[in-house]
Length: 253
Image (cartoon, rainbow, N blue to C red):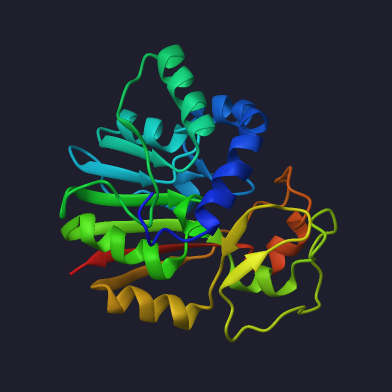
């Protein structure tokens, strides 16, 4: 790792290596399904996460088991999957063989992308770099590797959910705001060894603009009334009233 690699990178690598077997089943489900997003698996047709992918070079920044990159390949894109966790990449490689769909898988980190300037047309992240890397480090790198006019799209937890989430992730969020909005950045949970990053909307706008992006859209997916999730920290009822997730779409000028 580079000398200025932050300490949380190693913590997140260890955490995701330890969880790799748990996420292998979900990865297989993702590889076998049509594109759907977030905690409730909302269909692409209802979300519009993807930009145009046909014939474009696409980086999945924090690819995990690689199912998003598989969706990209099936839609005519040329994906490259990058992840911090060797164990997650091992699952991705196994699923590539099973589904007979190959694309490059790279062990690396979003904070120091091992790619030349202007190598990609699209950078995507669903709960990868979007929450597991410091935006003040990974957004400049995403901008560096994007060509002019390239698309950046990422999905993570909403700022509002982070204000209301319980420290105990087995207890769902309610209507109490438990932490400050201003200064929101680094999150470490009592029962999780990983380090997450979440920011308010103003901070996101400023960091994107500072790194040469125009904001295209902010999508707040709303699950259907009968939607279910396996994650206990937020209920469908809560997410039907307030946004639990947000998708940022930006374009490099």
